[in-house]
Amino acid sequence: MIYLSDVDENSGPLAFKTDDEKEIKEIKGEKGTVIFFNNRKTMHAGMPSISKERTVLTFLVYPTLRNEINYQITKPINALCNLNPFSKLS
Image (cartoon, rainbow, N blue to C red; front, side):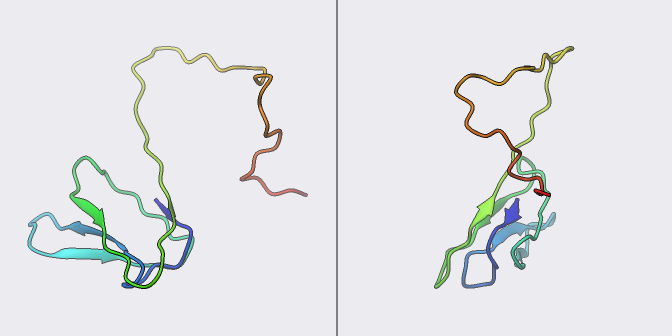
C-alpha cells in the first residue's frame, strides 16, 4: 500500500491488531509512505475518515503455478499508453 495523500488520525489511517490481538496500531504517514504486510494473516482495516480523505494505491501479489510465463511482445491494437507512467521523462 502506498499513501498518495498525507494520512493522520483524521483521514482514516490503516489499523491492524498486534500478534497478541490486544492493541490496535494505526499507521500514519506522509504521502509516499509505503506499507508492506500479509493481508491474509493480519487483521486490518482503514479507520473512519473524520475530516480528510485518505487516498491509497494498493497492490495484491499472487504467486503463479505456471512453469513458463509467455510475455506478449507486441502491444494490443487498443493500447493507449506508449510510455511507462512511472518512469521519469528526460
